Image (cartoon, rainbow, N blue to C red; front, side):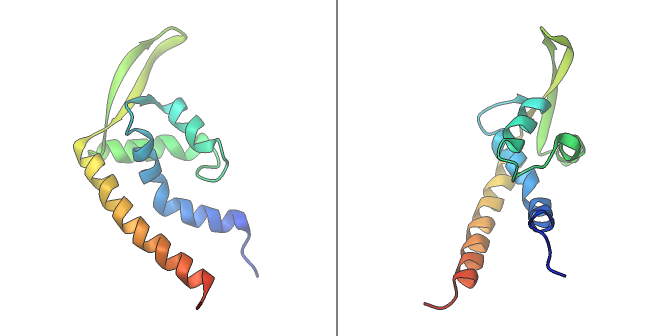
Length: 113
């Protein structure tokens, strides 16, 4: 059976999504819903919000993000996430690994020249 594009994307997301979340926090802290909105915008990086909050909890537990509660004009206080120094180092490491991995995959898919 030929795998579907959705199945392939699910497998690709599994290894890269946490680093995309870290990258989305490079510019500053963000509320979970805002992170989700950025990552689901193209429908490729994240299919829905359901996987984001468990992922953010794992990143927090690993010390890659920190959290703070802030008052909201639109309801109860909101939890905001910020990348930590360890998170920034992990993102840099991923970026180096991703670049060589992506290049090797592209080269293999393109075939010999």
